Image 1: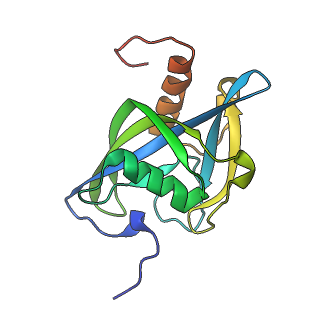
Image 2: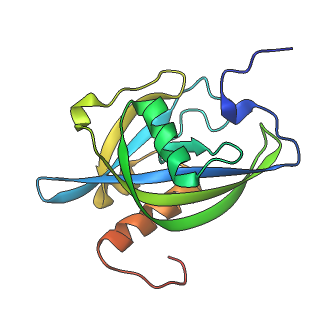
Image 3: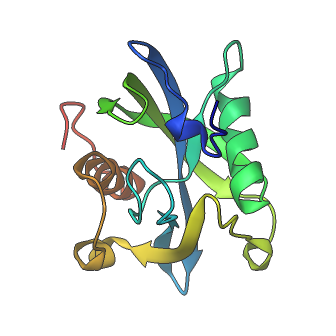
Amino acid sequence: MAIVSHDSEIPAVGNQVITACAFIHQEFDGEEKLFLPKRAETKKFLPGVFELPGGHIEFGENIVEGLKREILEEHAMNVSVGDPFNVFTYVNNIKSSHSIEVDYFAKFIDPIENIKINPEDHSEYKWISEKEIPNVQQISPEALQSIKKGFKLLKGESNNYGI
């Protein structure tokens, strides 16, 4: 039996998987920016793609606690988790599963100078503003929609009927 190093690659044939991700934002010189890590090229599912940080929620785990755990594991950072603001589904062909993702607003509790990158999970990260979204290459359409919605809601704009 092969050893699988990434949870996103463990087969879950025909199952639904719950994931939670965080729109971690912070103000820099009066401009709100989003923490955006890039998946490692070694990942089989979406290699080299920028994503909202987070991951799979374990069976029986509280979704917010699971999100905090994932960010601590992947970035060595504690977060304060706010309200959920977006939910979407996708098929993970590597796991042969159907994922349901819940995205939350969040902020780092620890100083941003302490951010670490686990090379098994990510290769780099950026802080991007809303106006820099078009410059981000390699991002999934679902993550892009969530990011746009998150910035829109931060500005107080909402319409309850999608973007």
